[in-house]
Length: 137
Image (tube, rainbow, N blue to C red; front, side, top):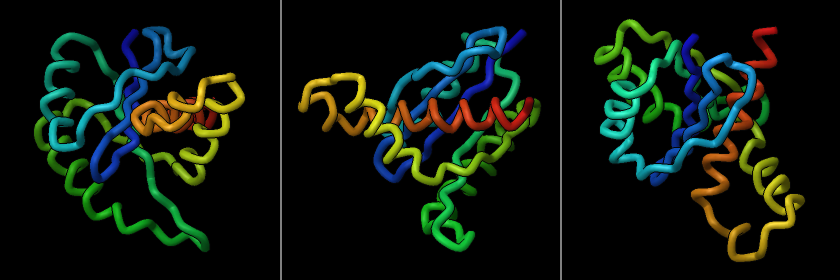
């Protein structure tokens, strides 16, 4: 089988998570500067078989999409142009950053690690991926 890759797209940094090859477990992968995201994905996709991509959908209260959605859609359009064989799905990412911060805190991480925004981004991507996987069952 192949993996599912999740993306928590951000203005500065983008968190990434991936499943194992059996698509049973979501794991944090990395956090990359958003301007280097396409280069990272190109390299990753040549080294790993990815079945589909899940990109977080930034929803605000009352079902309104967040302002970052315009940039996310540009990224998705470019990705689909470069990789038409890999379908892209969306998953609501509401409150994932808050849940990620809470999970990191509850893990007993020291204060310095809890403030590491790159850690929060990849844990958020993992939560997006877990939600997506649960919605498929």
